[in-house]
Length: 400
Image 1 (cartoon, rainbow, N blue to C red):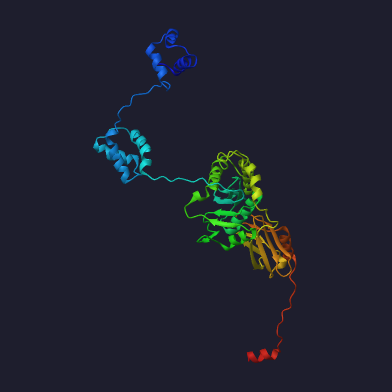
Image 2: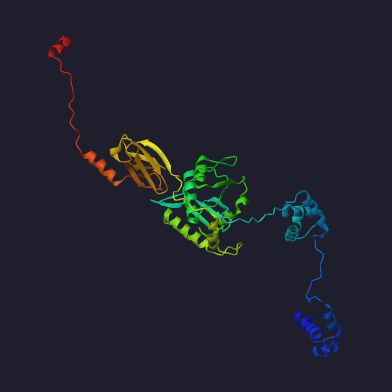
């Protein structure tokens, strides 16, 4: 049998250079019929095994009947059902054949590729790291990452939060939007409890957030992650590429490493786009609105009266208040960085603390501790006890 190179050489010499079959026979020593067969064949020679009958051939019709009744029938079960009919083949034969014919009986889901215009959409999701995040004082906490991904450029951003409540999720959204540098028109979420009020309606907190930024919102149907596949793919890459092999000193270190990872991820060549997200982001910002000068207010606020024990409790921690403000009403404001308290009547600052994400701690400001100590060291003012003075004759009459 001729190899491919010899076959091509014979055809070149005869059809291109005009060498006769007799001359080719003299040069190569091949038989005349072999040369003629090579010249007549339009396909290169290939070694082909003769088709042999399979042990599964007599049972294929039965397998087809089983798949018509149940297209998802497992291969193990198919083999068990055809063994009483005389099948003695191996498991691999059945599995290979089922892999080929099962699509003929089972409806497969197809996915439509969606093309987004610049600045049209931003998809969101919450990713929970597999390990708790250190927060200092020997403690760790369960955490989530708000993940954003723009539809056109595939540029992403993330923000670490420690609860799924609306103030924390909205703060994470605000931070991601500032990382991306502009505002897309439509915000796409799944049915996150703190944002979705039911029936596709936003909660008051989410509606206020979108209203301040002039954003549109959309909630995906339940159990339909494909509707926001852009951010799902980015989140999958985040799970497999960011977290493994990393260690974090605290939550601030986690956020710093997360920001650095997104910078690297946005600068990589995207396989489907065949471009870098950071390059397309520069183009996409041309179709997006600018960020407002003032961020939406998503902080927690409440009013309380300063108790004789001047502390306020938030997220299981006690923060000290100014002892000189005992009895006065203050407005407390808690964000992701600070806890502040301001007197309602005068606007004076009653407390300012760095927020602690560790739990069950008592945090006392130095000036508050000094004021409390000075009050303890001051002597109590002498107070005269007023006692009614009665004549002794009154007691004599009572005794008599």
